[in-house]
Length: 405
Ligand code: C2E
Ligand code: CA
Ligand code: CA
Image 1 (cartoon, rainbow, N blue to C red):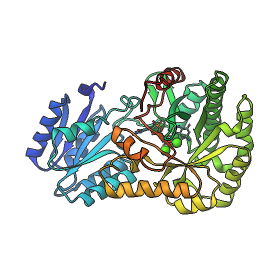
Image 2 (cartoon, protein in one colour):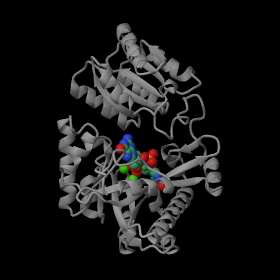
Image 3 (cartoon, protein in one colour):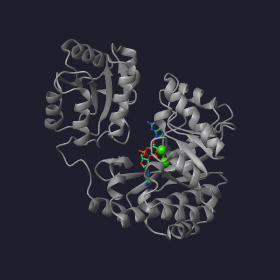
Image 4 (tube, protein in one colour):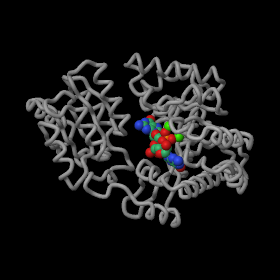
């Protein structure tokens, strides 16, 4: 359970009454470290002067002088890493557009609430605040937020990069089909650090990202070999970066990494985020096609958030499509979101792809998604990413005949 006393919240609203009201609601759910700001300037001031990070920002959109959109633009430029809840009395479509804009700017929006908010809606959103691996890692803008390349290079040499495994479950059989391998940095000082805090830095150095991906692939395949020896029938999905596609012999490099273990390449799916595809189309197509020829599966990750969706589907040799979690969250309440989710699944199926829906967090998400045509689901509703020992424990509970998802 989350220790809410530790959560530090900033509320930004030009309406004094609203500030006090939300403050009161937060107290009722056990959050006591609350900062109040009546305008954007005061909000920025608090964010930059606090030495401890602000974990959650609750932000009004309509405000005089600096409105919520401008405020969010400012904090996105300053790389604010905490979570954000938007709340406003503006029209629902405007609120949605503001939320989308904030996400596009790279901000971590966990919800948008229409005013007046109440305890239930706030409490539901607050459930998403603390991510287990982040709690200590969201630095305020003043501190050095991010690691430098050298620290990461060192961590790689010291073998501090580990892999967590998150199951994917078949909708038709209810069985675990595969696991996604997700990198975690076991930092000597901060504990496990999530990849959002270091992957983009690694990606800036082509040799480093290649070294990193190869190591994560090797560790993941090594783990799969152990499971296969124990007759646990699984596939693995490993994330690769677009930056990895800078060398034409990549298929050979990955094939060799897998051949070092007793694992066939068709047990390994490589996931790439579609938003970044197509920098050098000929080279991308060359590498991806040859990766397939070696037997690997290829998955389009975060589908729906990139730009080249149709092109990607038409020309690139993918075997799987993973629909981004932003289309799952809220789909049961929001018609447009649901429409995108349904059409993406249909599109994927029409292209003969294995369609995975990720970010299935709640019973409602699950019920909605399992009624659609998708093949597999992944998300906190099934399980969070785990260390291998926890995964095995979880799997035996999950496979217990009394278990119903
Ligand atoms: P991704 O590939 O989209 O991976 C799924 C992310 O969503 C994971 O975050 C996972 O923990 C999280 N997640 C899973 N289920 C749920 C859910 O129900 N709700 C929510 N809100 N989130 C869920 P994680 O592990 O922090 O990884 C973040 C991203 O970092 C990954 O996004 C991937 O793009 C990147 N990444 C992770 N490992 C590697 C790696 O080895 N290499 C590369 N290049 N990128 C990696
Ligand atoms: Ca992925
Ligand atoms: Ca994804």
